[in-house]
Length: 344
Image 1 (cartoon, rainbow, N blue to C red):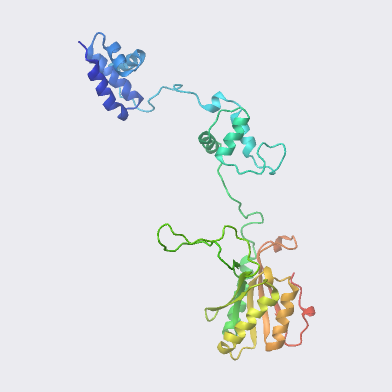
Image 2: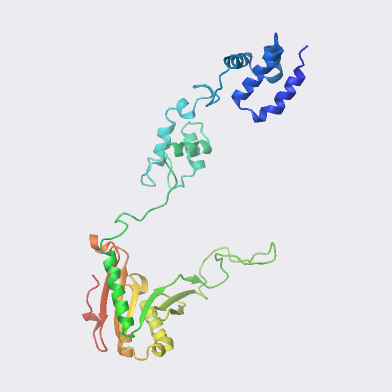
C-alpha cells in the first residue's frame, strides 16, 4: 500500500529548497520507486501534474545532468510588453524630453515618479504597476538624472592661463610684502528660531522646537556674513550685515579689515590686491563697487588691484563663457572711477 502521507511530508520539507526542475525530479524519483500507480499517488500527494512527473521520469531515464534554466524555452507567463504592444510606446511618450506644460502631454508639471507614471499609464488603459514601470525604464535605458552644466564645455582653453595670470600677480604682491585678500559674501542666515541643518544631543523625544515657516522676521532681519581672507597670513575677518548685501557694505568690510588687522600686519603696505568672483556686491559690472573702492583708496592712500573671476557668460562670445580673469587698477587718491577700464 502506498503511504501518500509520507510522500506529502517529505515534499513539504524539501520544497522550499527545490526549484522547478528539482520538484519535478523529486516527484519522478518517488513515482519510479513506487512502481505501478506511483505517478497517480505522487500527483495526489504533491499536487504536481502527472504529465510533469512523466517528463521527470524521462529525464531520470536519460541519465543526463541538465544545467541552465529550469524551464523550457517559451514556458511561463508571457511578458507584459508582449501582451500589451502599445505599452512601451506610451511609456516613452510620457518620459521623452519635452517642454513641461505642453497641453498635448498627459503629464504636466509633475514629478515623473514610478507611481505617477504607472497611474498615467493605467489611465491610458494599461494594466501596469510602479514596479513594472521601474523595470521597463531600466530595460529601455532610462534613469533619473539631474542637470549637467556642460553646454559650453567643461573647461575653456584659456582657463589655465587666466588662473596662472592671477596666481602670478598674487606671488608678485606677496614677494613685495604687500597684502593679498580674497573676498566673498557667505550664505545669508535668517535671525530667529528657524530650522537649520544638523543635529545635537538632547533628551530623547524632546527635539528643539522651531518655526514651521521660514519667513523672514522683519524686526530681526537676516545676518549677511562678508568674509575677507588674508592669503598670506591664512587668517580671516568676517563682517556681518543685517540689511542688504551692497557694494558699500562689501567695501566697508575691507575697510574694517584694514583698520583692525591689515594695517598692523602690513605697516609698509602701499598696494592691496583683491581677488573675488564676479557676482553680487563685488561684481565687475557693479559701478558702486568701483566707486566705493575709489573712496577707500582716497582714504588710505593705497593702490588697489582687483582680480575678478567671471564664471557666467555675459557678452555671448565663446571666450566669455569660461572664467574670465579681469585685472584692473584703481588709482591712487584722486583718480576718477569714471576713467577706470571697462570690465569687458
